Image (tube, rainbow, N blue to C red; front, side, top):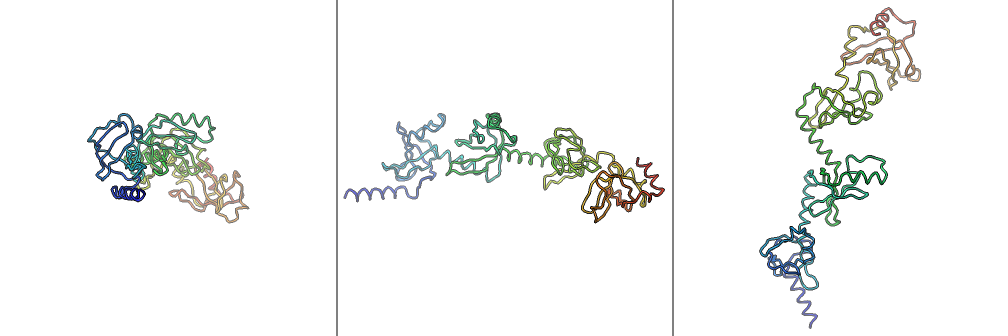
Length: 366
């Protein structure tokens, strides 16, 4: 009989709390406070119990409650061994932080915080009542190739320093909150760049600092926004890599060549602030003229010959194996000339094929 009554009482308890499950968020009013904890009226047939151990997890300034206060709680155990509905205010407040982290993630927002510690893998960042983790790979300034001691010294410099972060992962079940400083900095710079683009005009001249060199060109900071000088805009002469013209940290004066507000890109030019050598030879070069030059590079369609500083002409040929090598001097005849498009078509001729115009060309182009 006793077992049957116990089972009946158990089912009665289940009915009194309805659909309340572990993890449910509820709002109630404090009706009693003692050394064992807090009793909360949750509008159910059973009151919720907040154990004193849960209150100890709160900062002292947040643990001052009075009868009548309305609070949010999370269900920890719908029915414990004593038949209590056990709830937690600390976990409820943590849930608010999880919801805020989720909101930041979904809205792609940046927030600022100060790391308070680090480990070998990265930084630890307080986020309300939670602890976020920033992997070292998501720090924008982390140098490569650091040993463990150097890495620790580098990470320590970030402690107590206010930094921007983006939320990468929110997983309350695994208690996992992952952040990125690198992505936040990138997004912030992109937003800043969008504002700066609004103030620029194509044709403007801006001073800047070279921030990085790539095989396709150089990036220059022109006051909070990076613009790209494509390798073809670094110099009138052909260059194989940007390091032949620029170095990181160098101050340069650039021309705003193109602005693309949709793609958030700034195209810069270095060479267009220099004298255009093609304009200087408009009235000098004539089709049929023979010039002396130096082979600068081979391409699929033939080779280029430099006939004057910044002036390369193309010798077309399908038999590239039989062409002069880079650095060789050759005589070439002008077969087409388009200075407005910075193009010149050439053909190789023997020394005996020189015509009188070549003398004029040599004298003018020397």
